[in-house]
Amino acid sequence: MRRAIVWVPLASFALLFALVGWGLMRPADRTVRSELIGQELPELNLPAMVPGKPGVSAAALKGRPYLLNIFASWCVPCVAEAPQLVRLRAMGVPVVGVAVRDTSDAVRAFLARHGDGYSAIGSDTASRVQLAIGSSGVPETFVVDAGGRIALQHVGDVRADDVDALAAAVRGGR
Amino acid sequence: MRLLALALSVSVAASGDAPLRDPAREAQARALMETLRCLVCQGQSIADSDADMAVDMRALVRARVGAGERPDAVRDWLIARYGTYVTYDPPLSALTAPLWAAPLLLIAAGLWVVRGSFRRRG
Image (cartoon, rainbow over the protein chains, first blue to last red):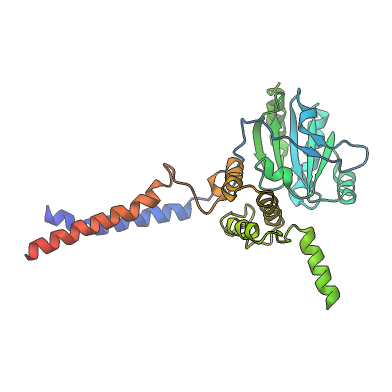
């Protein structure tokens, strides 16, 4: 009995060592996800960002599912994402944009250069909407169902192989 | 020099970093900022970060505290959106309970060991 106890400190050290080693080897997932998934989209009202496109009003959008895309003209992954949003629009999926900390001229130039998949774009100069829906970066895409609930959050740019899944999620949100 | 100071004060006001007029509320807001995590710089509080998003989070804290909201209510509002990850002062839950219980358990174990060795000597 006493002899066994002698090994306890070494064993606990080995256990701790293994735990720390495991923690170091495992790639950490630092994605901060919104806690609002499955809940109602908070009331948003954003003024129009560019002429010829309406701003964003959550109440007015109720009744049919859509994608809510948080983006910015200064965001590099958003450049890669833009053509995928154009594809989604061509598939009949409404994409509503929220331009974060941006200016009208910069967004217009961005759309002209990289493609425009948006049916509406609201201007969120103080990240107000971003904070209200639990988004922690750009780009992020939310699927909002017909009842105005957030069904899904996609963190990072929408890639070519995400398009079908997102379109299906929007169709499933009727 | 004065022009520079003016330019600085204008940019501070525009970025939402202008202090609240009521010093008591400003102190409350600042204390809260120290305990909120910057979401894009993760190792820093929003009080310490220069990231645009941290500036906007400070503006949000000031706007809400300035409007008379309790700092705890502002923290809860953010927790409802980002989870307890957003606060450096996590509430007691099943997940955080070991943090509070571990020191007590270690002290209890230490006392037990001490009691055992005194007894042997006596």
